[in-house]
Length: 438
Ligand code: AMP
Ligand code: GLY
Image (cartoon, rainbow, N blue to C red):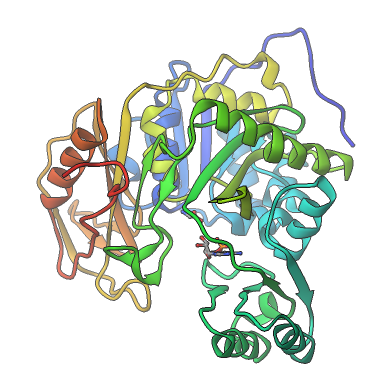
């Protein structure tokens, strides 16, 4: 286990940052990194059609897993910090390979990324740490799984163990549906990710996303956020990556958030550390607030999308220094995390056919005047050399607004998204229904 890198020397300068990823989360992270006064330049690899809309941001046409080229670029551009957005490269050990060249990386190594990349591994860690979570069974054969359902005589949640782009979970309503999901997983629906399956008792309650920025040993929490996973209004329809969010989620007050830090986040980081894992990055705990208290539904090893787009505008410029300090294992030397008192609202616009088979290539028309409390973060977009923007992915972009109340924030977010047009645009009109009055 690496010991803390505490040092009396000041943190090294932070001037050049590389963000890895191409989604709305990375677009928002890059925008937030540019706000830091000492930062001169932010690259995003591979970025998207909106990367260069933020002043100070440049696209780097290198894929997240092209480690050899990334290392070359980071060394020749003298990059001070790399922030890795998505779980794929983290699980593949991209952070480890960059660190091996002496680069400062915000994002866990492949060992810590198992928190997200193996649900069974995460469940075992939760048990070891005494963290409240649903009862579970890890199974490796269909027969074993079906026997558990027969014994339990109740529908269960069926989860592919490995990464499955958010599609590996079935919250079954009936025993038949549970059995069907088990059979599909063992028939190879999720490839190698479904060779091991986790069955879970179904919990009930509202969900909330908690983000802890960790330096291996210490952590600081962001305000809680609430996502909207279903495609349709009224929280109906298929699951998606997330159709909108708001923060701070009113489900938890400051004291409850602090309680969750002590009960869930700190024991998680301490247990990782006990296992010899130096976790420098985000621990994202997806919680369900049940009648018997908060329970962990899942852990992720990265920021949530679209929670990240919602939260970034609430962060003051020193966020970049905090991520940098985490990457160096020296959070105690970072400035305090200052968070705006405003409410933030985010609405996602998705392409025709999302989530099943999103259509690409629709021309996007944006008629909005941005201001300091209204942002657009691009995700599935590409720009042409004529400066036209086309859809190029499922979730196309998000509009985020801040206000003194959730009503004013959502009014502005909807005013913004109503001024965006492309054929087949889909968005929910009820994001934030939990906290707004109109
Ligand atoms: P995950 O991919 O683990 O985030 O799961 C996707 C969604 O499935 C979660 O956001 C929950 O809405 C739901 N879910 C997962 N596990 C459970 C559970 N044990 N009980 C009820 N719902 C669950
Ligand atoms: N917003 C859910 C996720 O990022 O997994």
